[in-house]
Length: 259
Ligand SMILES: Nc1ncnc2c1ncn2[C@@H]1O[C@H](COP(=O)(O)OP(=O)(O)OP(=O)(O)O)[C@@H](O)[C@H]1O
Image (cartoon, rainbow, N blue to C red; front, side, top):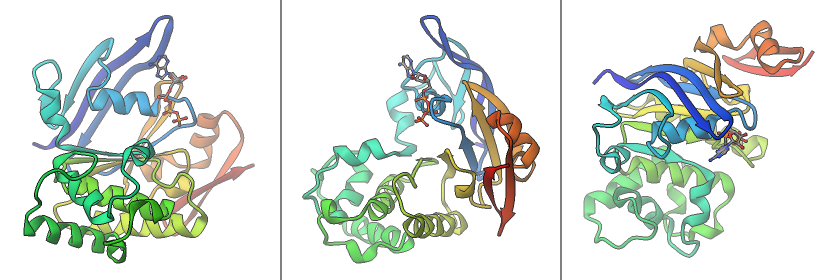
């Protein structure tokens, strides 16, 4: 399966409102994408379409080679990891972090199955890869926001997803926690057997070089999409934000300021 996502003409209406309009999007395997848009631009709505929680009013949705309408969505969702802050609130604060991670294999909040030796080994390896192995026996509630995000990514990877959605993972992080989390994500993208990733954000500077493609979403429309280096420039972003901005490149990342 070479295509991870293939959307054609996806439109989603709610009453009088058109919240997504004619979205075409094609993501190939191992092609990591950034999805950039301001508040209310439709990012979460689009993710809900991809994960089958919303049904498009019009258009075709094919995810992981499966055409929606002919697929068991619960089964498909087992191959998609969606890391978002809303999950953080649902987890049990008193659980040890190792169980928070391992329970990702079973997609449960709390661990009710007997994990195997290999599950502990895998959780340990993932936590090491994300730089949070030292938290192994800690209560989840005692971890910082940045640490929790790393644990949630490890948790999502326990299920061997083919698609990993990182939904604004740096929200609420200070500059240094953010950079530590981004460095861990960058490390992951370099490892073999990692899923194709979609990184959702409001901020261009969070888009790592590994996210070689970017879609700009504005008022439910795909304003521009393509190679990140072609999309994140002063002219395109000024038009996109409808405000004069300057995009500056520093170490293969793009920083935007008001002109
Ligand atoms: N079920 C719904 N019914 C009506 N309107 C909705 C529904 N879900 C989302 N919206 C509206 O659709 C628009 C896009 O919302 P969405 O949450 O997808 O944006 P977003 O890009 O994820 O925003 P943010 O960055 O703030 O999370 C918003 O105006 C929102 O109020």
